[in-house]
Image (cartoon, rainbow, N blue to C red):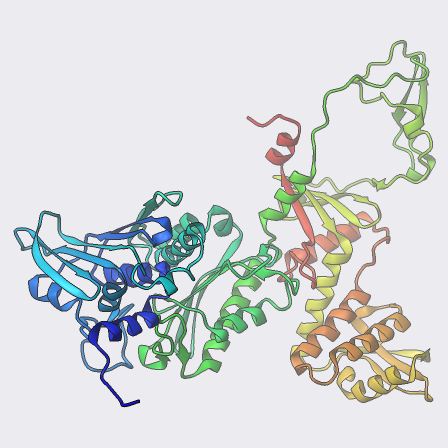
Length: 612
């Protein structure tokens, strides 16, 4: 078959395949044009998920006759000040975008500049231009795209449902709004719920826009990012480790004002949160990077959704440092969503008649005696017991409690303790949960999870300055293990010595432990070594050194923490609370679970219907 020149309309339709993937890609191109035109208000209207109608109205600079005619020609643009594709300082610059859209849909563009008496409108159908003709309008531009892919049925049938396409458009506009807080965005149409995000300005503009788009809940449960490193400026909001989602759809990345998908940024965020979240949970983050345009290539993807950094290592390091410092500054803070989950687990019982006591003249009252004695005594001769009196109780419920689940000691009632963020300990429940009170509400603390994080952070701090201090065993502890586990431990022995664990092979099926990390105190050495051996079998040698180190620290911290079921004195409980307040990341354990829940006084009142 001989070579031939393709007709112009077919060339435009082929080019459209690169730019016009679906209605959302059209909206993205047109809204980016409006932003580059200096618009302060952009209205997006759709119908049938964009397949029937996409209208973008803006109050930007507008176009005169010459610019309007050139706007629908291929390879024409106003977004390059010079012929340098490596210096891109605007959002979109593909000169064939409008020409491509006009080849696969009915395109109408009306525009007016501030010094023109009226606007002008041109239309493009199947690649053929009509006009311009006069159009009465205010300053700005109105672009309408109707019947997308009507002349290409094969492309049309591969589009998703109206609801799915409308959702994709919403996501595109949402990201553009997040990147441009100074622009007022309105999104409406017959196929969606309307959205209205007014422009915001000032020092808190970014946080205010993120609150509009993502929700106030995110702003309340996040920390600010603000750092510069290796020429990379990092800003935005990073969700607390206990504020996560089941997928990565709530992670937003922006580079020089452009929403992108980039493996370097995704990997950096995953690494920054590695110590704090479950593997199947994803943090919520809005990450903004400012980089010299010459250091980033935005021409990797036709729609500019992907890019390439010249120095990916510097970008990765800047992001990890920014997120790490912000989370460290948050200290023990945990997300309010944890308290909301707890409140949702409570159910208010229906009002019912109080059960009749077997002996109406008998009741029980708390004596303040030791918990093991039951703490109750029989009170006789009370007549008809008042069911609303604190002394009322059924004998079958209380008399048999020889070991109550809540243990109350004389708390330290000094007023100054109430001023601490985590308050003062009031009781221990189920030998694992500390009940504390501060000036604003009630706190429930998981003593094992909290201390596990404290030990973990101490391990990391000691490793940063050298090997972990160890304590020698008077007599080496001999632990019998399968031969393959002994071999793994023997191979990893030099690495384990950095963590204060000194062991050596003791025959074919045993190891001798001579020193253990001093941080662990009197720990279960056998259980610790078996746990580390299991981890080595899981990690193998293919795991990155840092991943192996973090995992080893985690397993050791678990063994060195206060165990569930251990009774603590009041001073021990308060010491744990103070350590939590002074330790970064103590709001969640090393597995990503919250270490404490705080219920404000108003939350507790709401449980009892006392809220106003």
